[in-house]
Amino acid sequence: MSSSSAVVVGGGIGGLAAAIGLRLAGWDVTVVERTAVLDDAGAGISLAANGMRALAALGVGERVGAAARRQYTGGTRTPDGRRLAAMDGRALERELGAPIVGIPRADLHRILREALPAGALVAGGAPAELDGTPGRPRVRFGGTTLDADLVVAADGIHSRIRRRLFPAHPGPVYSGSTVLRAITAHPVEGLAADFELTWGRGAEFGHIAFPDGRAEWHAVLNAPAGVRYRDPLAEVRRRFARWHEPVPSLLAATRPEAVLHHDINELVTPLPSYAAGRVALLGDAAHAMTPHLGQGACQALEDAVTLAATLAGSRTVEGGLVQYDAVRRPRSQAVARDARRAGRMGQQLANPLAVGLRNAAIRLTPPGAMVRTVLRHADWTPPRIVEPAA
Ligand SMILES: Cc1cc2nc3c(=O)[nH]c(=O)nc-3n(C[C@H](O)[C@H](O)[C@H](O)COP(=O)(O)OP(=O)(O)OC[C@H]3O[C@@H](n4cnc5c(N)ncnc54)[C@H](O)[C@@H]3O)c2cc1C
Image 1: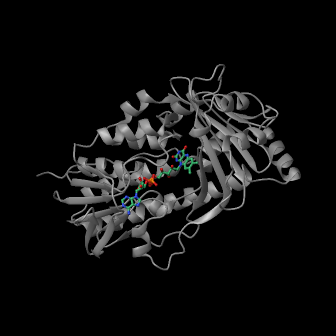
Image 2: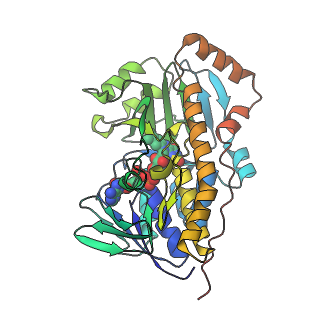
Image 3: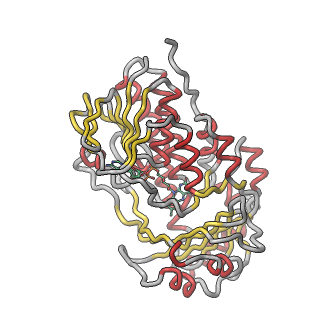
């Protein structure tokens, strides 16, 4: 397709990655973002090999790799510290051709923003609205109306554009789990594992270590929707008081004001399409999933590369989006299903007998088998984004 103009609604990981990809395919892109400050800038993220390969296809893989810590050691434990499964990140990197890494979200976001030219991201103000029709879309934002040959809805789990295009879709639902997380204020002494998850009954504690020795920890709990704690850090310390090291050390290295608390919602009913006319849905707007496989952002990055590649290879926007939908919907919806299942068998499992049986079964599996199951979606090869000849 010859070069045209696109408006991306939402400047999260998915929206910024889509903008970078579309620019590589020759598009003129504007990203409109309602907030000046990221909602989850104080958290970290793991990127599996598929996410890293998508970032490499977008030309930012090396910068992200340099700011991230490779996840070579760690695995899964029980609260008393006994090992359930160990991870050999070096072997996985050799197998998959890319590492699994941990990085502060703010750093990932900065690298993605810096890959765009000045002025391509317009942030702050009222939420953008889709105007016109899917066949001739426009975007209203900050008192102006932007015409576009393509609109990318990267406006997250509560996407207004998804609601507008699919009014009968029930939207996100509460998963049954709530998450509290924070980045430690300083490096944590004796943090041996790059990445670790510990499963209790209806509760998980995990950490992602960063290159400077700090780490993000997360505590995921089965809880009623909307539960809030007067002192979130004190609540996590109380609940995880008897869990193995480094859980107490991570919590001791945390400032109370650093703790973020979000309920985990997901799109349980799959969307019937990720495209309508000249509007594409991408990332959490299209397939918000639970974080139990650490794949939400990785799938958004895959979407971004695939969108740019299919549009570059198609004569019309509509044709490119039909192909984008055909490639991305089955895969990302399968990952979302598996993430839900992983949560039910992992963090959310609360019955003591079932937990004991699960743990025994994991211990009986060959070394590395469980980690491979968790990472089965990480083996992905990006399509090439080829800018059409002028
Ligand atoms: C606890 C937790 C841990 C996770 N861990 C991982 C992990 O380790 N690895 C992984 O791959 N994934 C992980 N995920 C999933 C990942 O965070 C998301 O899938 C990813 O951030 C989605 O990116 P996005 O750009 O699609 O949406 P978002 O990050 O939600 O971005 C949407 C953006 O659109 C903006 N916006 C919304 N509406 C409008 C509007 N109308 N106009 C303008 N702007 C608008 C918002 O302000 C926001 O900036 C995790 C999720 C959770 C909750």
